[in-house]
Amino acid sequence: MAFSHSPKIVTDGLALALDCLDKNSYPGSGSTSWNDISGNNLSGSLSSGTIGTTTPGVMTFTGTAASSYCTVQNPHDGLARPSGDPLTCEVWAKDLDDTGYYLGKSRGVSPAWGEFDFGINGNRQVVLYWSDGNWGGGRTVDTDVVSANNWYHVCITKQADANAPDGVSIYINGVSYDVECYPSYCGVNTILDGVRNQYDAYLMIGKGDVTNQTGAALNAQIPIVRVYWKALSTSEVLQNFNAQRSRFGV
Image (cartoon, rainbow, N blue to C red; front, side, top):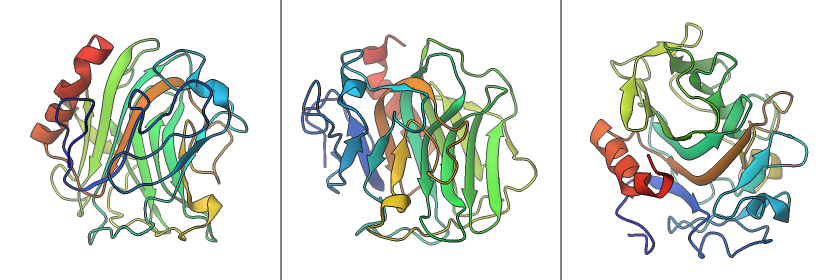
């Protein structure tokens, strides 16, 4: 499969692709629809039509968990995840003045741990948390790896064996950063499976999973989101970065 609007990006293992400059994904100013163009036809709903109108060409999330986010149909619906739950989360984003989550996925049932959350912590480290009932996670060793008001391509991958060498990898603008377990447990491999067709199990963009709303929302512009049920290779991450970097002047 190929996208009609942009250079080639990696499509193998692609579960979700959102791009607000593609009319098939975002119909236009004032719309509350942000739809999947991966071929999996997952529906997205913005909490407000102003998210796509504040700044043309991007989605602007205000950092208000209760009123500024996008809800996307559960990426599990009709899609099989590989054994061990490899995962890639990828965004183009400009963090305006805050820390929080680019996106998060709630399980939707008790126990209410989120499936995964991807974003920036208080030390401005890029982080990914995931859970199988116990939390696992990885983060950049370096702090202040992203700064406010600059565009970044941020990508984090989890191998089926998160304990393996390079089990968790983090890339910023195509460059790999050293990763440490967060705080000490990359060892959780599998990810809890959400309940299909249940609202609380949907993917949230602009904040973390819906069971973790306090302090989780991010004040940021996010025009592109992709989720893969595979761990992209270093060359694949670089391919995706190079495919769209000129659009953001990077």
